[in-house]
Image (cartoon, rainbow, N blue to C red; front, side):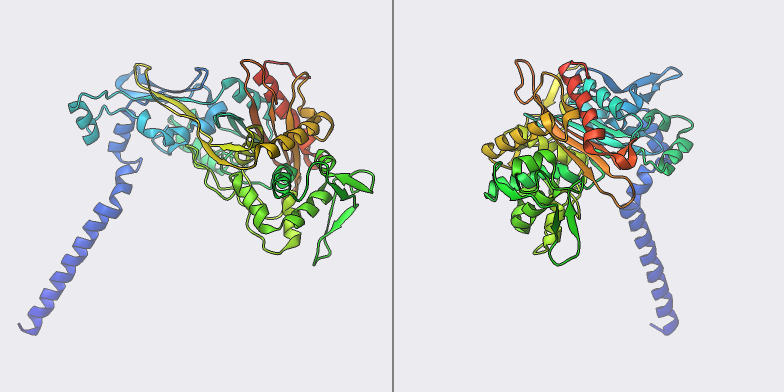
Length: 488
């Protein structure tokens, strides 16, 4: 073969290789993206022509449904009757912005097979029901409304759990948004406005944002001290006015700048009730990295929480021999970051005799005839502390509410346990926290709930915010709603 023919053959082969590579890329790599692009007319027809199942709360409130378009019975319109109240839990299913929340997580059962897809055809051949299924959430509408109302215009989150099962009874994040605005002709501008909003209304702060937990983490610190034998509730500590941090000029001081009690000695119980930073900083240094981090991990920190929705991992990095980090972590600061869900699980674990329940949002899946086809069984995830330790923590947390920093969470005639937190931030006023559970001893027909309340930047109070003044009253409203009692 002479030189010109070889060059021509090489050129043809190169061109053929480029053609094969391009076609392969379009089919294998880029194909799914083009197929699923909302601008694809086939996608639009598939979404609008496919009926989706309903989503209801545990007490039967409809939070998502599909209705036939009165102008075209072959087209279905998605509706969110409760708008902002359930936006972050339910999410949305849209042509322009895709899907989020439970609309995305439960997309399979919620979608009808009444189309020309292979799965739909095979289902029909097999005599299966092509109609969409619905889901019943674990959310209790009373608690959801109470939490949403109590947060008001403040930025933050509330999570409520059934302590015995792990069922999520309320999940609120504020500010919220109306998912109905993402469905109509003005969806584009509405979506852009939500994305550009500095307050991040699309962010589910309950599970997708992490914060320094402040003094609410003293529950975990105390648990580590009790489990390792470093201290008991009656153990005496020197009541110093400030705690020097080894190897630095920094110190840890209490909220008011003075000693925890009388300036002589103070028990672990009293330090917990008064939320004394100096004592817990000392305990953190006594614990050290390995046992301290391991106890936090027993509660679920540094682990993936298997909720139906994706949850950001709470983190507590090992700190080796760095004693200042140990002390600051023991009071819920430094590199420690948690979600409100994680802290609700800490409270629920104490109430549940030390067992961590797997949280879940879907109670049941039902077919188009309202027959239950699948239900969720409560699952024990792990054990965080012994029942004895959980009992001591419960007694300590109850005193926080009866005579300590958490009195504003108290409900008359009901035994409530809790812990407040005021977490310093790098950007402004402190974040206000409360975690707790109640009733401690439920009566017949009652059950115990655990709660975590987080208000960013002190909410309406701002610089003078504390967990006791800002977050605890929100918890009180939720506890009262659960028990059907008025608040003071």
